[in-house]
Length: 520
Image (cartoon, rainbow, N blue to C red; front, side):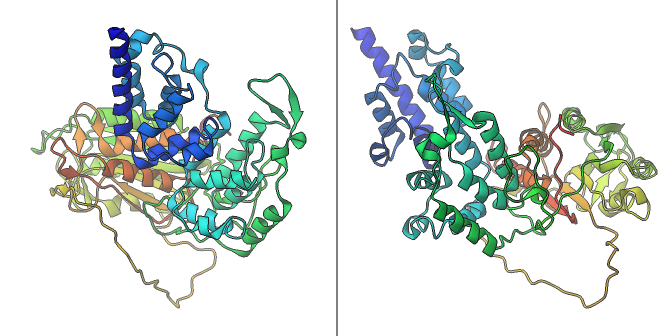
């Protein structure tokens, strides 16, 4: 009896540790995922993880003998470390459930998980746009509240605007605001519905038309359509901010048809660079390690970055060229050699430079400085006509000074920018010489960037991780770099005082969206 009490107490302590690790937003995520398992009246009273776990235990959905629901929730919300900690708990191992395959214990519906995945791709500005489109459909009082997207989904479900077999309204909204997600909804419908509804725990197959939840209010849909026709959602296509407002797939915006072909909409706000060439292009990686000739420190760990870049850009379809331990002149020569190639059948070109640096220069292994401007000019259309109107992408891992960025308290800045105009005429078919460039720097001017000798640099490793994660989701390159900014900004040294902030600078005239590997 005492042993059983000890195990129960151990389990409760494990639950307490989980709830103490959950943020308020993460708790709301769990409540949304559990909304099919618990009644809304009970969920509305929950303000802590402890209360949620008590509700689940009272409904026999969570226990020492079967903690699989909580493990599944932590897995869906990507709290992997917390999930593993829960699984490895001594009392859990004794219960014999920790090793059970998770897929055999799934209780959160694929529909609920899918909505959660959609919410992870939406920024604050997108949420405001969605609320605006729903202003005449849902209660204005509710919309003016600080509703999260998941809470908004629940409100749409109450009004029969959203359901497991009723995704049309959501698809039409997302197709206009974030076309990639509009197509993702269409793909979900084709894969999970395909004209029929198949319940997991039943044998019957019913037509979608026969299901009550499939009947959406026509007046509500028409009202939303009118709102979409009347407004233009202006996105900042020339700035760069952390709200992830520059989304990909603008060329293919619009309502997704039920056929497998995606309609091409000609009046999209921001076009994409074409990625339909016979080859993706060349990725040149300049990897400088040995600086013994000029007295600079060797760059321990740079080979880890090189291997990560080689793997991810090869995965994206690029031809990889590597140059190691280049002097200043050799760095320029490698780029000039690249400019002499014929890139007519290529979509773009990439240059990654891993080296020491100064404010506006890259340092060769001989100590010679090469200005960033000279690097870029080697690939200008005047020197390489086959790269005309094609993206030229530079990723620079180098310090730009010796100062250390300090950790600071969160602050909010308001920035008013004047728009400058020129009355000078510009030939209609011409482009500026330095158009179509991206220079993604590992740090802002005057500051150092950091390199882990055993794991590589913060910037390059985050770049490679996010390319692998977000390219298959249809995110454009600037959105991916925004995520890189966010990830690197959260890192610090062991003291917690030294920080790093990457800085992309660009003159791109369209969005860069790499086709997911495996697709034409």
